[in-house]
Image 1 (cartoon, rainbow, N blue to C red):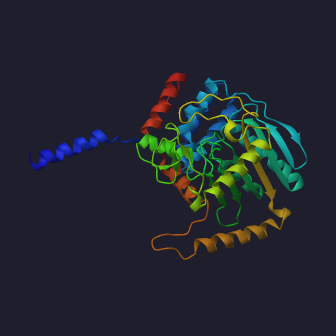
Image 2: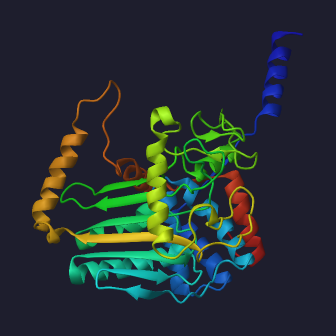
Image 3: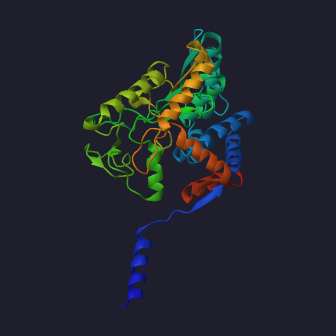
Length: 379
């Protein structure tokens, strides 16, 4: 066989072993409009559908593709299984001037979250800070979106949520916690806001979904197999394994990630009357899982807002935040790198995607096209 023949044979073998993912470009407005129409098709009001679409697509814009429009089909599956109320009566069921509990009435967290954050901000306006724990909700997208709603009011915002049990605590073989993210948004003056938004696990489950679509292995330290051994399996839940807390193992601080996830679970679930720990109902990930009988009501969230002028004049604080941010950005960095401030990468990606559009993997587009065909909506 000549060189050309060997090359063709090698190329064919490579093509047979690998699946290539095609990317298609869309504008944010195209995706918002499509998402809004899908939500309206399952009974959302126009206003709630617009809000849900805006919340969901904010994840794609900020580069958190795992929590954006790729999850739209999952919300529809929740509706199909009777676990999502398209017309919820979102209301406060217990409160003091600064605190409260909201019943999301099985609404989508993409709507329950922003509406609850409005209540939190109103409490903070009145008494300096507001704190509300939510029961009976569903997946709420990215935590950062909700926390950032406080910024325009010269407030520090906080958002967190518990989630389905996919995570094994340090030394555990059982899945007891969700990826349980937490976000804190802090305003500045001339500099962009500080926005920390992260899961309490080594990686959010959506990162595994992206790897699955691309047929790629997971990095070491993200997951363990059914025997508790570290694995590169990108679908560990399906195969009896679990995700790992932030830190991955005890020697690298997994007990701290376990602690963070536990705090989020207690604030979101135990405090509100929602489910917690291994009883949190699943989102439509890792194959649809029916919700088992729990110890509370639905998925839980926790939101907070603090008026800056409850501590010091807002302009004075924001000026010092500018100073803080600039000093960290100017820190001496390793060769070829730059020290970033939380929120920098997402802000840069958002500007780029608003300008150039968003690229979606072919499997995501196919999923959206199937939804479109079902409801007679063109993507």
